[in-house]
Picture 1 (cartoon, one colour):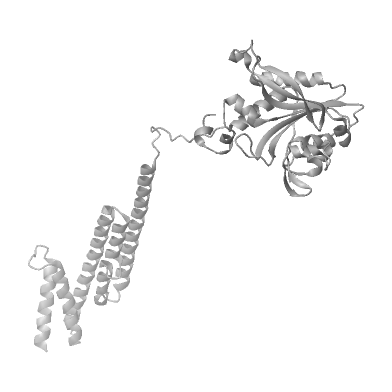
Picture 2 (cartoon, helix red, strand yellow):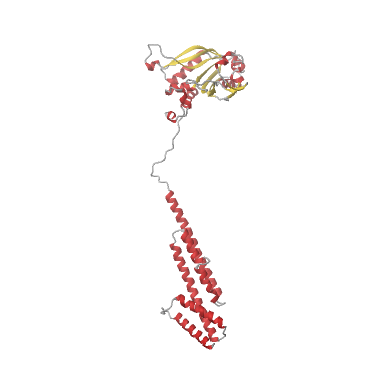
Length: 404
């Protein structure tokens, strides 16, 4: 037993001397530390109370504490170097696991706490916690730096190059019917007319009866109608707007209005559509005459088609006007046919408001008179823009529409 103790003492003294000898290179640092740990293990097995051996054990433990302090300092430096060198978040995460993970270097160092004296354990524990905190702080700072760098890289790649030509959005075009309607409205608004609107689904009373077309009137056959019920239909003209306008005004008060809108008739061929558009006009006041009607329409038609447009009025029949007329126009001055018989084209219908229409809608035909007119916008647009087929208006062909 004494021989064994002597051997341990000699071995411990030799190891301690090796630790003090900085120039000793025969054994590695790890090997010396392992021998010191082995010495403490052998001592526990002997369970000897020799004072000299206990003193040596304390010296060995002190040396192990010194080694652990150096290991912790080395870990901190190595970790900071690897954290600084990390180029992405994955590498940084791997570095964290390598140094601070359950199987990392810090855990390996702390396994040596069993060989540290009870007095030194709090010191080493505090040092280890400080190293962990410093490494985690360095990792957090580096993580923020990498995120900022990634964000800047993303912004740089997604930056719009304002030197490139812009991508121009295709701009739509006004439909030729809208364009023609605007021209018509502009002309009448300059003459002081207001623009009125009414429902497209209309009562039979407003569409026919209060316009001097009772249910048995033969003129109803001129307007093939879409009936929804016996008393409700799709309006066949915008004339109901005239009746509604008369009724909402004070009786016998002046009116000067136009009513543009969509109308519906049971008609469908190359020259007719079941859906088409009209503009109707109404003027009511004291002493309105046919001369006022003629002058108004001449101003309008020459404003729309040109001052050289020839205009003629032909007697006609409408149940809501009396007398009534069809208005024709000719461009003979532009086609060189002044000397011959010009080609006349019917453009609109008109007439003096029938006294019965005024009476049915609350006006007194003994005190006021008026005139009315109506035209199809499709026909106006075809003349203005040289369109030869009515169906082009409703086919939504972009090649056709973009010409306007």
